[in-house]
Amino acid sequence: MKVIFTIKTIFYRGFMKVLRHHVYEYKKGLRRLILFTCNSERKQEAIAILKKLNISFVLLPVLGKNINIFFGDEVCLEVIKSINKASLNSYTPEEDFILGVM
Image (cartoon, rainbow, N blue to C red):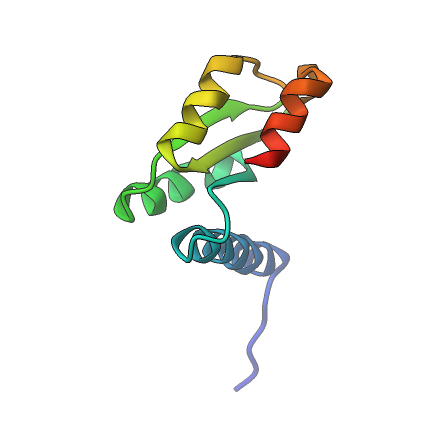
């Protein structure tokens, strides 16, 4: 029996691998804050996974069809909320540094 993978299937598998890896790093305490970017089609699935694992998150839209999902410690997410900028391009160098440290 020959198994055929479509481009959509390959991207889906890649999406799940990246998200699982990020969750693993967070759960192991390797990172306190994670930025995961995905397209709008996968947004609901990513949110469902984070909710199921009881992981806090913040959604920030990106131009086009993508969305940034910050997830991790509540303290870090509060910093993201306090910066209150929709685009990562609009962060000041100081805000970008703070984001990188977390």
